[in-house]
Image (cartoon, rainbow, N blue to C red; front, side, top):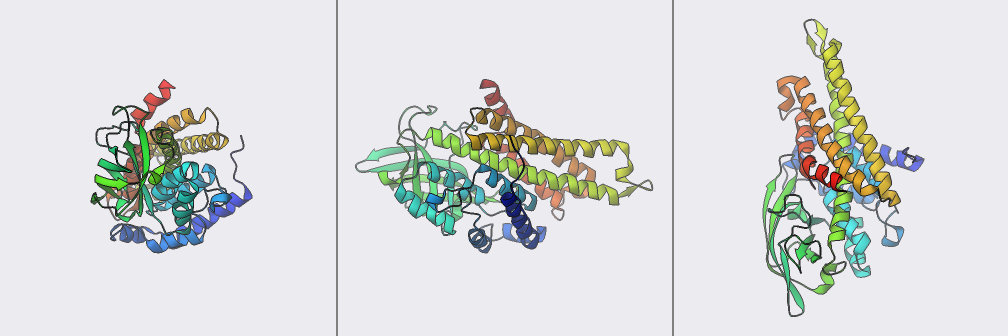
Length: 375
């Protein structure tokens, strides 16, 4: 298995690094987080112009024929820059579903709009009672003549206030915890019957509680096969975990390198902190946790690219390792920076919060450890 980057991927990585260096200092990010939508539409337009929104999609769909490996490269750099634009929700989650299960009409209208930067989308899958179980769905979609009526509430829907389209998982058959009987619908973000409670998340991003009350959707809005949407929900989850893990790897790299730089400058008892043996050991462990996470992230991504039977187990293992390693690296970064490590003025605190949220998205350490053991 060749884990090295190709020449094209290296050039792509360099272009993302340059964009972040030119556009994403901490002050700029804090300004974006405090804005109405929590991100920059201008940046999103640039993402489209640079082709980043088209990378994961096939040439037949108007994309560049990229793979999860290319998404990993982009998300790792986004993790280093703490990028707030809704790439995960729009391109990775909804884009994955459309590319795999969308009709030609859905691809032309919605996927084409995503690639051009004209459509923002999000995936409403989480529910209050579900506890990370993707098949625990009580939001219902019942037949009413020629249409469906969607009723229920979805929790922590990323960037819902800005979304033109919402992909929502619903129960059309079976019991609450059955894997069969789940259907995915594409719904307009401003459809009649949708209400939202918008809020900032602890890491500076945006999410919403989205309530559906008799929201009317036609059968043409179904993505994939009715009652058989769970497989697609799992595939979206897998791609989201790979993207989030790459983002976490990027964030951890900044944390340990910034900590090393700080300990070389900060003096105690007439010596830089980096001179003390116990702190050298601590920073070596931070480096090792980051390196292990990056290696497993690359392996899991390559297995997914190859369609390997081992990919699912590797993704569960990756999410466990990312959760444990990111906690170790972020906590030690804060501790070695002293009290100012948790101040808003220092980037360390923002990376700490983002990594804490990544650990909880699409299942935490305990959830994925159980899934890993069960396979």
